[in-house]
Length: 115
Image (cartoon, rainbow, N blue to C red):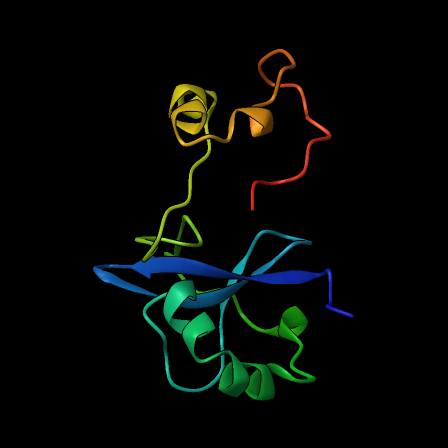
């Protein structure tokens, strides 16, 4: 089970963005051991190596990175997937009308996802 006391993050110091760990207890950003990644997306691409490196690692007593600016964790994603209510007419054109939610906006639908 994952340790809920910290999570991976992307932060910037000066003009350099890198992978770090955000301690939930105090909101401090700490450096992740080993070679740096330019953020969380790059680290996830090497997740097997990163998982081995962080196995048993505990950032609880590490010093905070001075002047770290916390950034959005997944900056510049390679792919965006969107499904908004404004796509209903397009789904109907494609013959997927039965998959269009009939509830009010913001309500959940119990319909399965289209094939």
